Image (cartoon, rainbow, N blue to C red):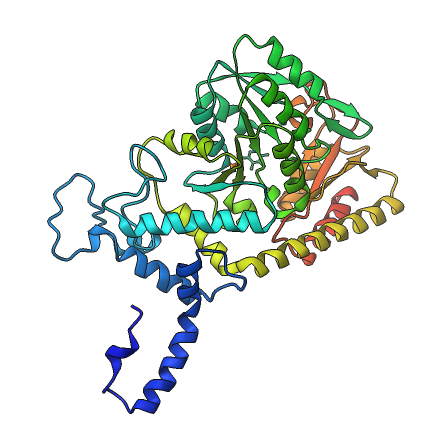
Length: 438
Ligand SMILES: *Cc1c(COP(=O)(O)O)cnc(C)c1O
């Protein structure tokens, strides 16, 4: 795969061999550096170099051994080359029945690929400024990873959940075998907020509190949970804290909230999506923590072997972007978010049926609409080929993140990482068209 220059001598004149060696060594230098340092590259890699590394690593799995006698019931026998390619050759998957992150004897290559991905994730998070000690990629999306965290960490009957109107976290709690104790939110001006005193009250009232599941990233007008105060409660009452940071890695605001919580109290596991933050296909997530033993417990909760594919996707994104590429994406996200504010303020100044809600949210905006059905507006935006907006009626408890309703109908409009200026401009333009009845 990576030919040793010594073994190539005698085929061509030495000065040409030397010239070729210079090319090869600078081309393959990122691989050498990666394997030596096991840190995120600053510069993103070309795709063919990523493919070469993945292909070389998957050749270390036992199913590639031409002399092996493979008689087990699971021997990475794949009938179609198409399927093998889609798994980048990591046909044995990752994990063991004991724990997800344990090396798999039949798959030395996939096990190294997974360990390397996890080292890169740790380095990535620490260079973005997170106060965490360990991280690992999970071969399942955010909801499933939340379930895995609760299953590994929580002991007791009820998981306390400050209400955020997303079905997945509630299903994640139930899947892990716990009951849900919901803490309702409050309205403060335009913002929907969690009162930490209510969270503490719920912990005290619960006959058997198992964990708190807190949310940081959410649609406005829902603010992030007061994580530092909740972490203090978790420490005081000795209850694990699992944090749903589904798409927060893209913005420093959420990092700062998490770091303050880590400093002030107890944080056991934080979950983020690979597709929402690292721009992979949907299917993976990553869990990280200031507490390495908590992560071991989470890894131990996984039942069996898993597909290597979501992990490979995370590794590909990390190598493709490098730290510089990711920081550039974060910078562009902020630019798009500012543009969204400008365009919505302009819209507001020209119309009396919209009002931009006064809610701090670094990724999305919410616009109160009068004289329109917000659900219908969002449906018409969908037909106009705008994806992402969400229309919520004031009296819909499953939309507003407050069971007792909200003061306005509204539409949320995002400017998340990876969106382009043209997307934001086009979305606001078409929003105005649907307000006009078009
Ligand atoms: C996306 C999201 C989820 C669900 O994540 P999946 O990756 O679809 O499992 C849960 N909670 C929040 C806040 C989200 O944004």
